[in-house]
Structure formats: C-alpha cells, structure tokens
Image (cartoon, rainbow, N blue to C red; front, side):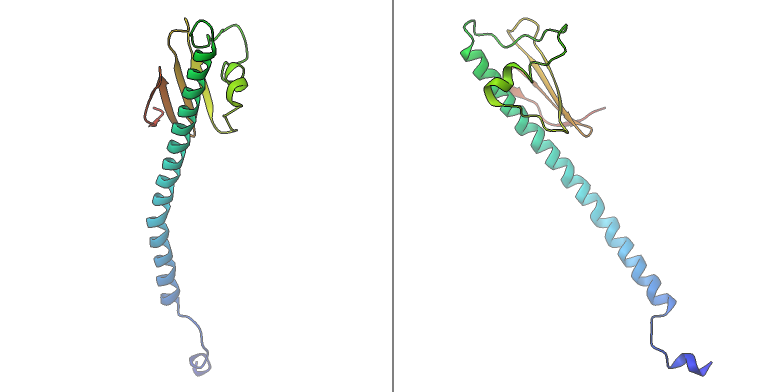
Length: 133
C-alpha cells in the first residue's frame, strides 16, 4: 500500500470537481451562444427584407404603370427569383426561404424565413423578426 503514496496524480474527487466545473461553465455559455445565433438570424432577415423592399420600390418606379410585380400562382418560378433578381441579383442564400404575394400590384406581402424565425413585410413597412409558431 505504501508504494501508491509516492505516486503523483489526481484523486477521483479532484477529477469530479473539474468535470462539474466544466459542466457548469458549459451550461452558462451554451444558451448565450444560442441567443446570439438567433439575433444574427434576425439581423440577416431584416437586412434581406430591407433589400427586397428597395428592389420592389425600384421595380415599381421603373414600371410604366407604377405597380409592384404580380405573382402568378400558375408559374413555378417566384417573382423573387425573376423580376427582382434582374434589378438586384439573387439575394437569397441557401438558408433563407421567401414568399411574395401581390394579387393586383397595388400592394404586397413579403415573408422571409430561416431556421424557425421569420420577417413579414407589407408595403414597405418592415416587420420585426418573430419565431414561427
């Protein structure tokens, strides 16, 4: 038994204390990083929404009738990918999905979504990012 007293190393209690401390620190920091990710997604959606609003206003000012583009439900291609992309290029990256609705060209509703968060914009009034219910 005396040969073990001269060996150097950590006791089981010391190792358990270190493991518990690491767990506590992880428990504190992980929710913070999740919140920061959501804030980043919200900022990205709001920025994309503003860019689309500017593109819609540019389309309306360039159009001879002064109307917004009208979405044709029979077509499989979205206005977001056709008329607006010719003005400003394709804004959407692989994570953002969007829908655009304008029945008469007088007004529109734009919805952008990413990872359970969404922004709804109606006639140049940019909505705040909200979780999808």
